Length: 289
Image (cartoon, rainbow, N blue to C red; front, side):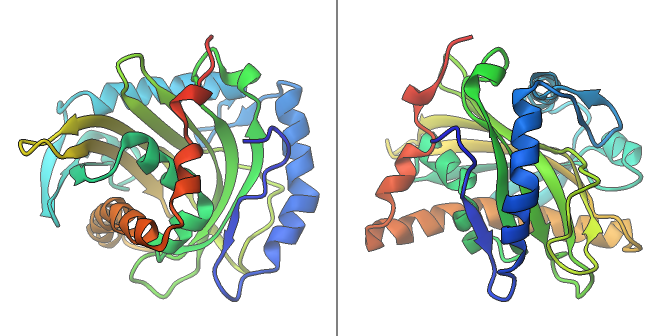
């Protein structure tokens, strides 16, 4: 993947105009700030460099993706187990902190993560996505002390699932990493940019406080390749929407999101369009600290 300004974007039909503004006015500015090692604001108000933010997020991901402590069962949906963390939900003014776990067959961890890194694929499997645009890819030289994969800033604009209300938008810092034992990690959290234009008129700024995957390769009892995927997620959608209503919808939307990726990959394989996505997240692309 090039270290130059990225061009991976997704715009749902009817929202084609914003990306031109984003690329011209935002990408260069963000890329220059990254290269200078400047600090960026985190959703919690802290100002940290990219490596500092990634270190903070990976510490959180490893803590909560490796424990059941504090979580309460939220039921099962389409084979995906769901939990809620009451304490972290309360700390976020009632916005649910969810944990999900699913066993997904016929897909490798690197392919799963590759598909999750591509904005066009995410837009196709997630009906809530309106716009997703990569604003800046962080050079691995900057992030290699924290993660051996890639990191980028991504603008997103989404519909609120199941409700006819204003869209939510934001900017996230995302990254991936592979442990020595082959465990894959993906993290994302919001980095507010006051100067980022709205992707849709009237959109309300949303906040991804925590979003992280742990992906482990395994074989099931029949010897078929599968991955064990665990996700933690919390988003503050803002506005006047009741928290209980948002929380009721979000868990199922996340479960659909995870399982639909596999269905979509199988469809792409039949169409012969899957091969190039196997290279977006390549274990050989890792760097050493």
